[in-house]
Image (cartoon, rainbow, N blue to C red; front, side):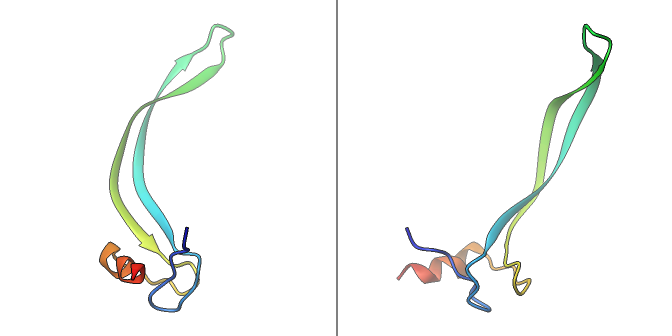
Length: 67
């Protein structure tokens, strides 16, 4: 397996992030405590980002490293 490097700075820490909203509904457990149940997750943005320089490469830029 080969590390994916940032095409901008060469940093080895490129990560994939997904922004999402999670819907949770409250309910009571048998012991009377409150519990939040995850009911739905809506992903609305996903991107790659280098934490070293802040560059957000697209998938095509990253695939150029495969050769």
